[in-house]
Image (cartoon, rainbow, N blue to C red; front, side, top):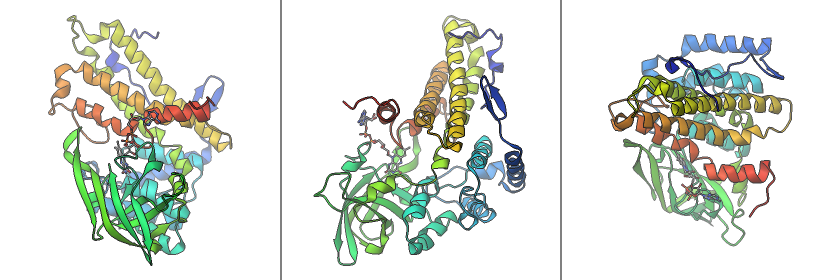
Length: 422
Ligand SMILES: Cc1cc2nc3c(=O)[nH]c(=O)nc-3n(C[C@H](O)[C@H](O)[C@H](O)COP(=O)(O)OP(=O)(O)OC[C@H]3O[C@@H](n4cnc5c(N)ncnc54)[C@H](O)[C@@H]3O)c2cc1C
């Protein structure tokens, strides 16, 4: 077990390993061309990023586009810095995988959001890009990238979360329209969205992964009702919704992809972007770790500072290793992907990153004692400000969506380790 002997653990500062660095047996370093790319990006960000007080204004939901965020996303689009891996006409510059990694490093390290409608930009745009007809892309993809419209994602239902294929929201083709009835839940930002990318059952007679289709539903249509509800972690912040569809008429040209082939849309493009999102957890873990390390002067139950407590020191050492290991795993996986090799590391990173963050935040909250529950005492900033206990509860937003930790373990067991299904 690692033991830290530093007299002042508050000075222990993990850093997200930034390249170039040397790991025994492996040399990880960006090339000159990539560092030129970084310099161009940094210069542009320094000249154009809205001031800190603008970026940090309280948000209303994950689909509420404030005026500044519309303008900022449009600026990114016009300058080719919105989706760097895409071509210029789609807000990019055909950046390579390593350049995209640099892009995410710089945005994450500086805590600069690209969009205040992350599901619209990160999940729905790739689906429109991959499966939309030219007319659909003109109608929805470009306005989404230019922050003119906001989206919600209608996947989960009361009886279909991890087992998404069990969804029951029904769409029946009637002439030129689908008629939609059913209910979604956990629909982030639905009450502020213009459109919903909605997974519906169009054929209930075939096996459950078949017979699913994807419709683009106008959230202002008669029969659509979004009922926002508060989060346990933040009673005043309304992002989640229940969404009810009652005889909603959806033109059949709003079908995205082929009829009954909706399952294919759960896998969008931007695989490089997906392979880089671990950096978000890596920086968040670093901030949480720093806050925990700074608590080492607090006095424990035995009347002595925590820095003298062997259990606390061991815990800190373990978390330090975790924060560094996830970063190095991320870069190792990226370098394999760039070499065209499989990268099983990336199947582990969502689980490892989100759980490391959660474990550090729980430990950090416990160390604060009753102050952790005091809403006026702020913990480390985790995407938004909040009390220590709020930040720990907020960390569940990493371990649940996009496949819960248990589902991630199933995937790792079956697809990475090749263990038999039971
Ligand atoms: C912050 C946040 C934002 C979200 N935004 C959206 C959104 O915009 N749109 C949307 O459609 N959904 C959204 N969701 C919902 C999210 O996709 C679901 O919560 C998630 O898929 C889990 O489904 P569930 O909540 O129904 O839990 P369930 O699937 O019912 O799972 C309950 C528990 O059982 C475990 N479990 C389930 N199946 C298995 C299994 N096979 N093996 C082992 N354990 C299992 C799970 O791990 C979990 O612990 C969001 C969720 C969060 C937390």
